[in-house]
Length: 361
Image 1 (cartoon, rainbow, N blue to C red):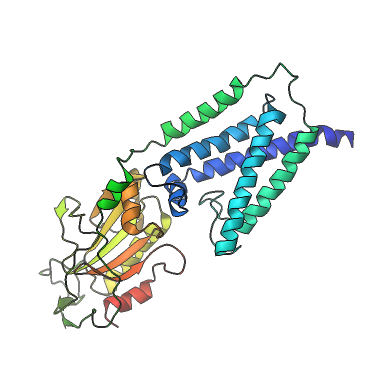
Image 2 (cartoon, rainbow, N blue to C red; image 1 turned 90 degrees about the horizontal axis):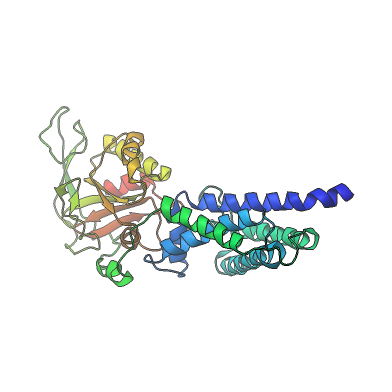
């Protein structure tokens, strides 16, 4: 029993260290997903979400390191950790009441380890219980020997690490980000909006159709009529891969992808494979300005290359929709949104359904 009392506090400290370090590191990859949580919850705008995200992750890393050192362990580090976990529990309780105990990913371990609000709540309660035990049985430095500068240095070093290794471009103002986007487009699913088309067969090997994405025996689809042309929220993007494009004219497929998102890569591959079966309207990609060095790898995995445009993170999410998620796929006709897929849940991209929509079935 004496050995248990001797080594158990250190076992708890190591466990808390690992939990907070894992939580902080998991939120870094990708960090934009953690930033988006603040925006979706209404805690921050896209102009200040990057600051909140980095300071919170730095706090988690600092707590993980601070729990292993002896300075102000009982008078500051453990109480602050308990209060932080209790605040998370309150937030999780509100989320469970609003959306259900088993709905979605709480983001405690980022995208690395998906965890429901209930699972995260239980985890936090267990950690609080362990910390309360630790508070009673751990020893800290004698009064007068504690030095708060150690705590300050740990946090400042953690914050410096976050801002140096995860830089971002500050936006000028939230109002400017929102004002750049026109919200005049609508999702149109009525039969009247999706008019008839005329199909003209093409012999294999014909390369006269410059708009065709696949030069084989895929039929050319000649559009006869369509919905009235409108100015969409996407019309401000006029250049893809250094070529001028009018997204509000004719049929277009517009995708919102993150370069490092494997689900986005899979969706791009599905579009490429679908283009081998049927004629697709031109496909254009808006990439989030995050991990852009992965764009060549993205197209290598997707086994295709689409014209693309790189957009700053705040504008990207405002244009896609603050409650929407990647991968985003839109079927546009004269600026009207005929079909909109987003995220990985109820409205995720369905290639079989999309084929029917494109083929007017």
